[in-house]
Length: 334
Image 1 (tube, rainbow, N blue to C red):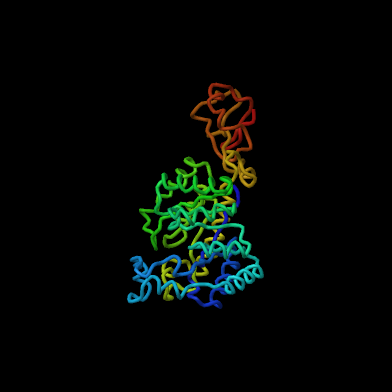
Image 2 (cartoon, rainbow, N blue to C red):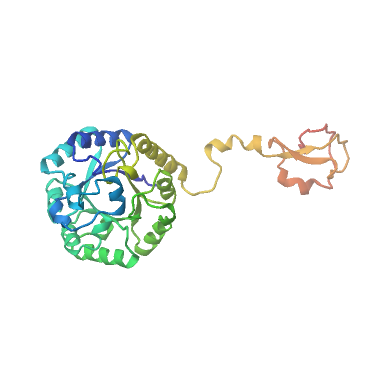
């Protein structure tokens, strides 16, 4: 199994504090994640003054502020991006950020990012898609809220405008925070694979880590998961995020699952081979057997160890004559 790419989604959980953002990078690196990802946007370019907050945002932020006012406090400027990219490099983890407007696409391109993550909300944003496509970068496309037709249309736009199809990875996603377990629909990972013949991962907004682990077992090549320093912090995404110990556990268990998936060939493993003689059975004397006596169900049975004649030959020996005397439990060795 190929290595699953783990994206530790810091998102806006830095709360506009650069020191907190740097700490999140350190946590992601220490956890074993491959990427730490933030969000790049200029508030006025992606949210109108009249845009309402999502229901989950009303629960986790100031109810009296607008969506625009909320995200304005979470912007990262050019200098902040440079500092965070440098800090990620120092910590040994790759830096990613999701752009939410056209200027932020330019900003990330100018900073040399080789992978662009398209969030679920932009999958129907034609000017945005065309601009990213022309960069011909590697793209991770999140498909939350979309049906197959919309995903197909977006892929056509990206390819038509300059992105190699082979450079696109899809992410199955349920865009709710936290996502209800009965709406996750993990089987859609295989549906997307079959429909588009592309690599498919999973962006997980559920509580806990077990759904991400199930996605890896189903073949997800990327796992994206929000994390924070403390779930009790004020902010739109903290409540649906992992804390540092949970993020580390997720990374460890994903690597264990990768190891456990194997190559699919059914055979005795290296560690199993030494147990074959111990666990399997041989033909043994059920009671004392005299030389010349006929082997029957009354005097022949199968028991461990498997160092004698295979128990699979039981029927072959019924009706044969014993060539020697046997004590009870003695291996038949004819």
